[in-house]
Length: 196
Image (cartoon, rainbow, N blue to C red; front, side):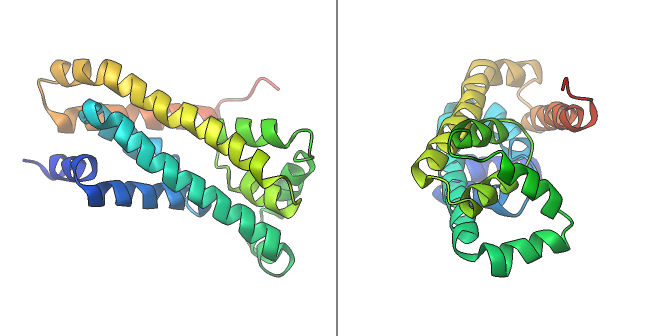
């Protein structure tokens, strides 16, 4: 069994693997601006019977992480968040995001940012900094991330077995292929001009 096979089996089958996936999702929702799908898409494709369990673990981790960043900005925007964003050169981007997070547009702004592969940390921090409704914020995150993660789970259940069959049952080949496709999608999302 290859290293990739052992890692994917561990993450998909063991209870500790689900906790690690939830922790990865927490990090992706807070400090790691890399879409988690680069890890979980191949994992789900290699283990389609566990796709919804994997989706549930990363969904839970994401909700906790999003709430943590919301509360951080709500409580400590001036002394901690603003100086950190300034040091990272993100204060201008953050201010632009914060302007889009009025009460009437909070849900849709957070929903759309959270649905795309773009890092949504600025939206989570912005919602907290403006004191937006925590219920509206969490509903937007939950709805968008449920679509992303459980939608990905659906695709893995639907097409994962076919991918494995086409790869002759070689999990490693499926993992590499799905990682390549996800990375191409993410790169295209960031590099191609948007229609606006």
